[in-house]
Length: 541
Image (tube, rainbow, N blue to C red; front, side):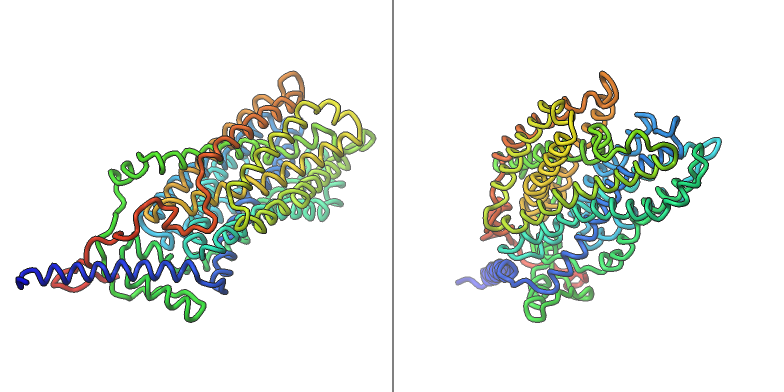
């Protein structure tokens, strides 16, 4: 054998060893037991979804309070109500796209916490917003809620991809579902806090000047401002969370360091990434515009992404169309509305109290049990069957609620039946697509594009939320106050049916590793040895 071939053989052997080390490390991570570190990841990510949901849906109650204080005739105009409700989903679209991409470029760790700072600042800004001759408070709130939406949007890809990349194969679905299930708790907390605040201010409201209602102004500021408390609590833990081993290995291309990090996790039950470790960058697939286009130009990669985008779009049309207008729906059907003989400030108190209670009922009876039912079955039944079941059941429920709306709302018994059906839609939203749409992109595609693709799918959903919210605001009063509600429910049924068809494009991820779901060959993932830095030394981390 010629001596000049020895270096080539040595390099080939080293590449083989690094590929083998990468596969071994990933296999160990995929078989790892559930540790306290995984609990910590779920809690840190889950508090984010809790805060996001609280901030998004508390506006249900706050918008009615704002109407009493700043509205003409104690009611916000249709455009004002639309503005404060749609601003957050619009901001969320930008946040999901921007932070999804940034997390793939700079890393999950570097971006985690930045989005929560935006949420904290924007929540505080809303609570402190004021009215003046040159500034309308509704306009100020729209701006702050847009900024908050950008932060909330950034939380979606990060708080889903991070648990996915730390999880073992057999627990990944449950970890991601447990994180997302905090949305239901966030909605419940928003309604519960609203109820507590309304009850605490009962005496003050009853003695207020009915033309001004100054204490209602205190109430909505407390309700919105308290949203920054859980975000502030979790901020430190987000800023100190370690980088995921898959990002270290596949994007930073530092196989040896990722292997050491995972070994430390398996031995101690804790995960610690040494920030002073030496980086040895291998030659492996690298993110670029050309590579992105090449990957997603393939049918087996593009079609699932389209399916994820449309499924998320479809469920958010209905989920946010109703979720941000629960108070409107409850008032439209007369459920919990104050009786006609209740007048003055007592009517204000009763109305706010009933809206808070109605929102609590919908969360407890539908959203929370639905999410945790998904938790029980997502790693046994699979993601695809649950999403398909949810879309089909939602189609049936919205058809019944829409076409039988007149009969259901004509009597007390009918109204109670309508609320029961409404609770079922919340149940099958969360025991269905509202839980699973975030799992599919969070466990699909290569690590270098996973967060970006997640952001694209999630942003598609929020585009649906924006369209739905604008449509709801513009259509709901056609033919009279809330007269178009039954037809909106029928429209939602159509989108649920189309969502069932888009689910057929998706690939089941149950029992599969992230690498198997990436649709990339793994045997020769690394095709070059570590490159050295200046003077032959390895690059410093």
